[in-house]
Image (tube, rainbow, N blue to C red):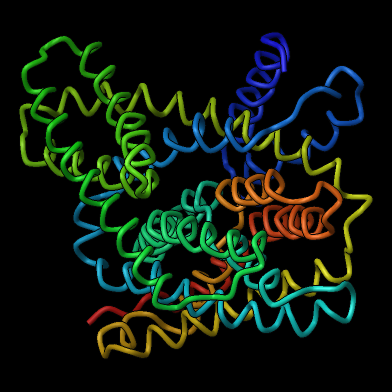
Length: 400
């Protein structure tokens, strides 16, 4: 991928975001993916590809930091237990139920082992709120659904990577699933990532206090985003959770200090441009990359699995919100439906597919199947969020 191609993709992305002001029925990410599919028809873009390293080590840390830093601390305090439950226990339950359905239904079309079904379910479980959070906030006066969707996504990104790594090892090596070993590894990697994120975010927030130049403060925020990620990966823990925790810790520290309001304005302005730039590249590249697999995809199975992901997610969310009285009172069936539909498969799912692609045979039928399901999710769910939310929010969240 040349510099000229990158600049052209960024320009296209900027134009789409600039023109798509309302982002309601046709949100920018959907348009970008469709543009990417169109660009794949031109020979000029034949050598363009998105790799696991580019997505996971360059784009992802910045997007995670932005989401974590901008996520309101008060929103986390209000919904921390529900978000935590959905992002951990809810993710495990989703993977388990979805894997069984994929195993049973999938073998009617292609040969699938239980390990492969678990791997597919793990890849399709993380959610990406990028294309829907703004829409949710516009389509409803109540912000809690958007907060839950965004908070859950930040947590289940980290959780899904840990689960995926264990399942990928099991799939490629043909080893059996060790529940005890999985729990130990999950706790070590997850808690280790959180510990590094808290420490790194706190230290960097103090360092920024000693720097009065706004440009240097922004530079330090870049160190927070990428430094926490790479430090976590270097130490063998979750770099994703390290970055998410560091971003939230930085936001929390500056939220306590009114003198740093000017810094937050400067930081927001810088990272908003970075976010739009990265999203432009990611969704265009997803479109270009997906085009290579469309012809080989088992579309009937992809559609069935896509429907199953929605059904399982709705059941899991409904069950979890019945666990506590206050959740049952505040999260209605309609709200559960909106949270379900807003759980779009996006950047993280693509990163996991690319990780799978790097570890298995290029002709593995699971790869095109996953790209087809992700494409269906991105387009259908993104386009449907606004009309569905407007229709269902006639009786929104019920607060006591």
